[in-house]
View 1: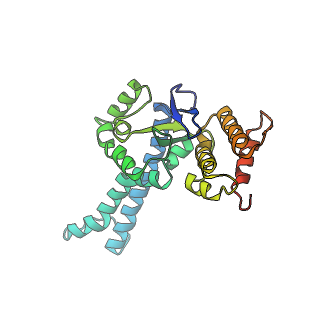
View 2: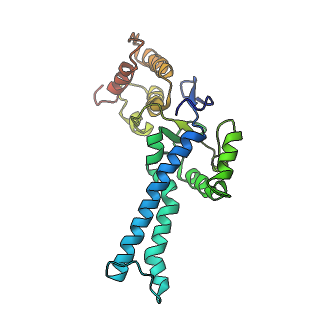
View 3: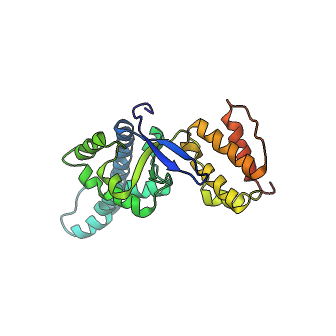
Length: 245
């Protein structure tokens, strides 16, 4: 699916070199949404069934004729909460991803290429109510098809973009990486942390170029690694994160 969209998001890294992040198109986003829709529906229905059985004290889904307020609060409201809060909660927990997005190889990022904050995720998901109109996300899909960056209204309001994730391995949070880069000065640690955080989303050539510049500038290494093996570049950066290096 990664070939469906040629659009790219240009992001300036702390190295001063722009990197291009491939933007996910309507096809990949729809595929991820279908997976997530089934997951949240299953979770919501599961709570409804379990809650109803517990409430009734027997294997029955009967809606009580009286005390309906308690039934709504204990059974219906939690199920609705699971269904409607699935995306913002899961995207915040998984740093811009959901199970569906992970399977489709895409991720939500800010226009600076980083993981979105809770406020942005909440805004983009509130606007799902508009994007889903009149049915089957007609408004959202229509806006995405006419947007250069495949943005739906929720993305425009929240300042987010959905990009392809080029590597299944999640990069460590930049703050954690910076704290462990003992061999580098503060500026070098910031650059290395930024590179490790964005490594999965970068093109292979961009990964090697930025890693080479980092090693040469801050450690004086010539970094003559094989051009065809980007894993060596990542391994060398990981060595810098180990205690005592």
